[in-house]
Image (spheres, rainbow, N blue to C red):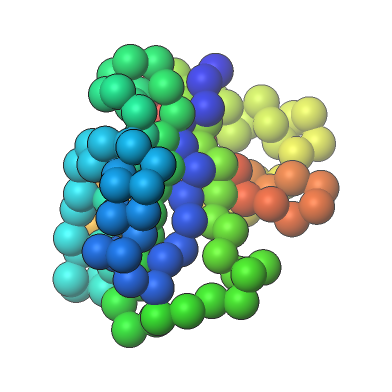
Length: 128
């Protein structure tokens, strides 16, 4: 397993990209617009991010939401798995809480699932 990215909700995508790239020196690795689902994504990281074996930060702008309470800004940690379906079964067998069964992401075809840790933090499993 490998940590792929951490997601943060942001109130202004341009401001956030500028901070991570210009202030912290990361690279804008890729971005996605999902107007029908009303969100935009930008992935930032050092080097080539996951292509260099490094974790990335996923910046998510939910259209129309300009600010969050600090506690609401946390999104999830993502972990790459070979088979999301098998990983969910293994997690459930070990007593874990699968909160979103494996299946395609909304608006795409990547297979994902979500589990919740004992404190309620979300962990996304992404089939790689």
